[in-house]
Length: 190
Image 1 (cartoon, rainbow, N blue to C red):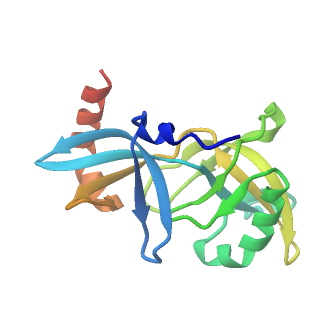
Image 2 (cartoon, rainbow, N blue to C red; image 1 turned 45 degrees about the horizontal axis):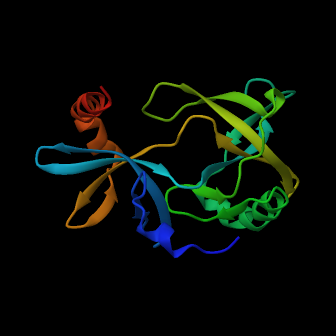
């Protein structure tokens, strides 16, 4: 395939902005929606590449015979990253240590019904929610089995643009502004 310089002149359907985390990792995102609230611009962002979650199989606290999938803690990802990257490379996916989430560049493999599952996700201060995932691959590390997945529902971020910089809206601030942002978002969608 030959490079066509005229493609650079065509406007993008969705502009792309980049989120940065405290470790200077980048996360390119499409701007799905832009809205103004109290004189500030807020953005609804969708990562350009596939979000990736790593889960580990652990014994169920209630039933030692059963195993459950548990989300891997952020501190564990560095040790798992080389193995995770290698197994996704076999699927022609390039795992990246992006800001705020792992991502993979490449085409998502076709999903079979048996590759998809629902998982109840609970956080300390929130009620449990169910999320749907597509399993991409599994691997072993230090006698534990890990599963690499991508969420079936889009992973969206709320951000603010200030002085040309895009920054993630922190969870506490988002909860305070949630109804205003949702009202504006639904106005934009109508």
